[in-house]
Image 1 (cartoon, helix red, strand yellow):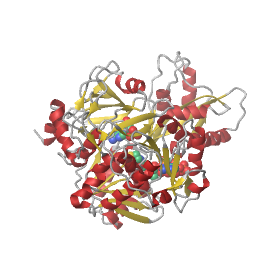
Image 2 (spheres, protein in one colour):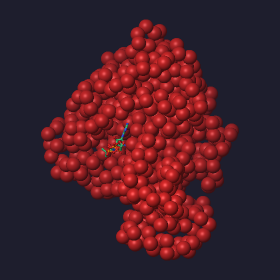
Image 3 (cartoon, helix red, strand yellow):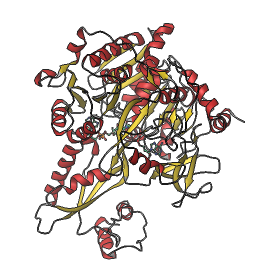
Image 4 (cartoon, helix red, strand yellow):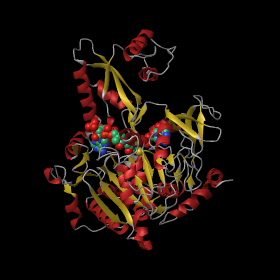
Length: 626
Ligand code: COA
Ligand code: AMP
C-alpha cells in the first residue's frame, strides 16, 4: 500500500489514532486525550477536552523556538508599488499590541469582531489579534456593499468593527468609511467601536466620524495582550457564504480542529515546510484567504505572501510571474479564472520569459473547476505540476486533492484527484442510493467530517441541519454534483443548487433576484448563472415588466445594474438584463431555471413534462437564439 492509501485507511478505521497523531503538530495548553466527541451526532466536536491558542501557534511558538527572524509575511502591493516584510517577531509584536487595543476597547473572549478590510497586512494582524484574545472574527469581503455588510453585522452582533479607509481597484479607489457608516446605520445591532487603518492613498479617516478610533493612535501606547487559552471547540471565526436564499450562512470554525487540519494540510497536501515561501493569490475575505493566506502558512512557520493586485492589468499579465521571481515563491495557490485572465492577455506567455520563476515547484488551483484547457496551458507554460483541489467555505480545507507532500499521484485533467484522508466521499442519486463508479449524482461526505470543517452555522442549528445534514441520513450534502471514476478520482461538475460560481466567488442567484425584483418596473424575474469564458459563470437576469410599465430597456438595465451594485456590491458582476414577456414555469409555479440556463448556453434541452405553457419556452428560445 502507498502512503496515501495507508493514511486514508487509518483516518477511516482508526480515527482517534490518526487525528491524535496529527494533533501533535499543534502546541496545546491542555493536550487532547480524545479526538472526536460524537455524543451529539450528527453534530460532532473535535478535541473536546483540550485547550490552546491559535495565534500562539501561528506566532509565539516560532519565536520561542528561535525563529523570530524568519520572514512571516511579505506584503506586495502592485497597486502602489510597495513591499513590506514582517518577521515572526515583528508580526507577533503587532498582533499582541492590536490584541491589546481590542481588549482595551471592551472586546473579550467569545465577542465578535467584524473585519472589513482590503488586502493589507493589518487585515491579517486584526484576525490574529482576535484569535489571541479568544474573540471571534468575521471578515467581510471588501467587494460587498453596505447592505450586505449590515446583514452580517446583524447576524454576528459584533462589539467592534475593524476597517481601513479603503481599497484600491484598477482605475479607482473604493472608500470604505461611507459604507461602514451606512452599514452601521442600517444594522439594528450597533458595534461599540470602529477602528480605522488610515491609508494615505484613500480619503476619509477615523476623525471624520464620532467616536471612531485611528489604528495607529490606538496602537501608540497600548499594553500588548498575552494569548488567552480557549477550548479547542470554541469558535475562531464566522465566515458568511452565499446560500440558496438571500440570507448568507455564517459558517463557524473552531480553534482546535482548524489548527490541526491546516497544519496537517500544509505538509501533506501542499508539501510546504518551515521557511518555504508560499503565496495564495486570493483575498482575506474568502475562505481560501483565511486558511491559506493567514492561518495555514503561519501555523507551520512558512513565509506567506499577501498580494494586493490583480493577475492582469497591474500593470500587465506578468504580475504573478514578477511576484514569484521577487520573493522566490515555492508554491502558488490561485483560482483558475486568474490563470484564464493571464492566458487571455498573454496567450504565448511572453511575460513569463522575462522572470526567473525557477523557485516555483507547484501551482495549486481551487475555487472552481480547473478546466482541462486551462490545466494543459498552465502546465505547459510553467513546466511544474498544476494541481486542482476541491473544497468549500464549509469544509475550510480540501475535500479532494493530489497530496503533493504525502504521495504525489498522476494528475488527470478535469479532476481534483482523490478524497483527502478523513473525507469519505460518495455519490448518491435523488433517493440517496450510492452510485457506482462513473455515475453522476449528488456528491456527499460520510459523517463525521474531519477536523477543521464547519462546527455549524452561527446561532442557527436548524438551518445547519436542514442545509447539510437532513437530505441524506448519515451524510453531509456538499451541494456539488459529479462522479468518482474507476480509479477513485473525483470529478466535480457543478452545483446542484441555485448557487453560482463567478471568478471563483460564490454568489446566490436568490439574493440578486431579490434586488432586481425590488425595482418598481419589475413584475417578476429570474437570475441564472450562464457560461462565461473568463469567469466560469456570470449572473444573467430575465425580467418581466409590470403591465403598463413604460421604460426603455437600456435605462432599465442600467438601473438594475446600479441597484445590484449598491445593494450587493461590485463583486456580483451583474451586467446582463433581458426583458422577456413571461418566465417559463412548471404547473406548480416553479421557474424552470435549469432549462433557461440550457437555452441561454445554447445546450440541448428537453421540454419538461411539468411545464405550464410550452409557448413561453419556445418564445424564450427564439429570443435567445437557442
Ligand atoms: N473591493 C471592492 N471592489 C472589488 C473588490 C474588492 N476587494 N474585488 C473586486 N471588486 C470589483 C472590481 O473592481 C470589479 O468592479 P468593476 O465592475 O467596477 O470593474 C468587480 O468587483 C468585479 O470584480 P472581478 O470579478 O474581480 O472582475 P475584474 O474584471 O475586476 O477582474 C479577474 C477579472 C479575472 C482579474 C479577477 O476576477 C480575478 O483576479 N479573479 C481571480 C479570482 C480569485 O482570486 N478568487 C479567489 C477565490 S479562491
Ligand atoms: P466557496 O465556498 O466560495 O469556496 O465555493 C465552494 C464551491 O466552489 C464548491 O461547492 C464548488 O462548487 C466550487 N469549487 C471549489 N473548488 C472547486 C474545484 N476544485 N473544482 C470544482 N468546483 C470547485
